[in-house]
Amino acid sequence: MSRINENKAKEHQSKERAQKVFSAIKKATDNHTHFRVGTISQTLRDGGFPLGSWEVRGEFTVLKDAGLIALDAASAQWQLTESGTSTDKI
Picture 1 (cartoon, rainbow, N blue to C red):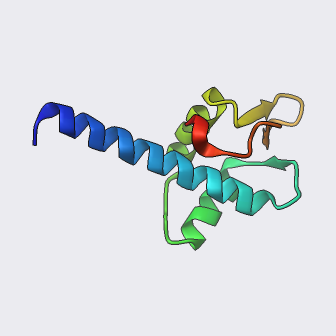
Picture 2 (tube, one colour; picture 1 turned 60 degrees about the vertical axis):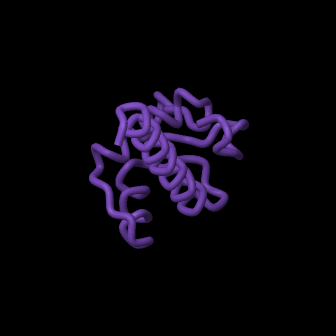
């Protein structure tokens, strides 16, 4: 496989993983405003997509950079943003 194809495959896997994490966030939050890494890790594990907490935390950074989630400094919990409805931004 050429280096270009390898990079495209890695980029696709990364996007797919961020989308899985975002889907788990939406499932776990279900009308709640805040969530933590551990809750999302458990939701992913229950859905057959186990990731370590540090991996989930890394995906939170991707989702934050895309404007889909934000850290609430007062509660030290994460929350969906108003634009956190679609993974098109990832």
